[in-house]
Each structure stands twice: as C-alpha cells, then as structure tokens.
Image (tube, rainbow, N blue to C red; front, side, top):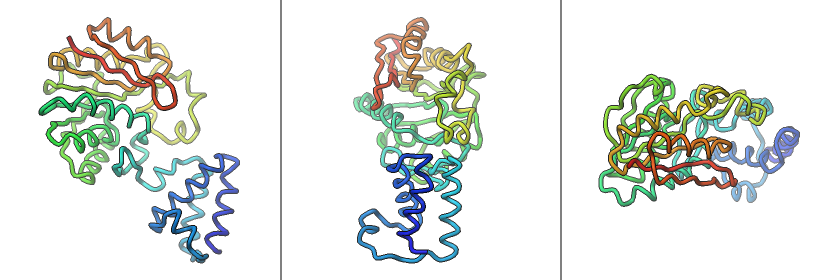
Length: 282
C-alpha cells in the first residue's frame, strides 16, 4: 500500500475518536519518529510503498490509538520545554501547563546565585531536569515514591546531560527532608475521584492512577504535607511552587495561609484555568 493512501485510511479510522487535526498530528508524529520525515518532506515526496513490516507497525499503532493508548507511550518519548523525555506507563505524560510552571520558577530563580531546588513527586523528571538544564549552577534533587518512575527519571537526566539527585521516598510518610532549599516545587496528585468523569479515556485508562487521584474527602493532603515540610526546610524567603487542581485554588491558598506562608500568588494556565501557586516562607 502506498503511504499516502494509508494516511487517508489512518485519519479516517481515528476521526470518530479524535478530531481530524489531532488524528493528522498523530500521523506526522509517527512519520517523524519512524522515518525522520517532517511535514515539508512529506508534502514534497512522491508516493512510496509500505513494505509488510512497515504496514504491520502502522496497523499496530493505529489499533493502539483507536484504543486511546497515548501516542507518547507508543513512541516512548515526548518533548517538554524543548527537551526530549522518555516516558512509559509508569509515569505521567508531561503537560504544557507544567511547562508554564517551570517557566515561572526559572524567572524567579534568575536572581539566585547557587539555588538549591527540590521537586516532590517527580515522575518522568521533567521538572527538575528542565530546571537543572536551564540553571547550571543549581543543586537539584527530586523525590518519588515509585522506583519505576525514578528509573525513568534517571535515564532522562542522562539523556539531557544534567545532574539531579533522585531519592525514593513516600512524602506522606516523611518526617523531615534531607536538606534546606531555596525552592521546593511539586505537581502532586490532585484529581478528585468525583472528577473522573471529566478525564479523557486516554488518561484514565492508561496513565498511572497513583500520580493522578486523591480522595474526595481530603483532596489537599499532599499539599498540606508538602507545605508543612517546606515551612521547616525552605530557607527564609524560600519559594514553594505547586501545580494545583483548577477547582481548588482558593482552598489551596487558604491552606498555605493557615500553615504560615505569605505573598501567595495564584496564576492561570494557557487554558484560563487556575493552575499554579507560588508562596513565600516568612
């Protein structure tokens, strides 16, 4: 089968599940990953036939996408802040909103000479690795409960040629941290069980629930624990950054005030949702 004929079949199969733009984006992501071919190369190329092995590969990917397996897991990698990160079902796929959080941290850290930074619940390592890449004088550490996630994060640090100290630790059972820091950041689990109906199947059925969900009766439990630890282990005027549940911005601000933080700022993401908070230790 000619590849350009297969493209029409590929998009037609996926458009009942995804919109046409997203289906076409999947096609070109695979094309770039498997053939190192850009859209412009594809547009200028005369038809080429897919051999049996190539057709088998395309059919597998099409079947998996039809079952709403995330394209990032199928390709085994994604981009975040201009860097390449390997991903698997043991870690959440990095989101554009988290890039905004990282940009905010970088803008605040510019004036620090040798910042010490801790990321809690690191997953793929996208936050600490990006910070380490852009702040070469920073000492960056990261915690996660999952050894599988930490193995992925360590690999991503090697890929991106940065040094990050990764630690396996259950933050909810942690009584004290190993150091003091200028900046602590966390994108912890924050989706309530009651919000599952809003979650797309490609996330709900394939990404790790351990990194996503919290109980309806205590949705801020990670924020409370991390903020309590941060109040002790941040240096004076140290900064605490969170990515948050868009529905719980005011509750998160109130929690931080009660624990003792000040100069709290809530920001919206590129979609207009309350998504990130910065607070300052007195």
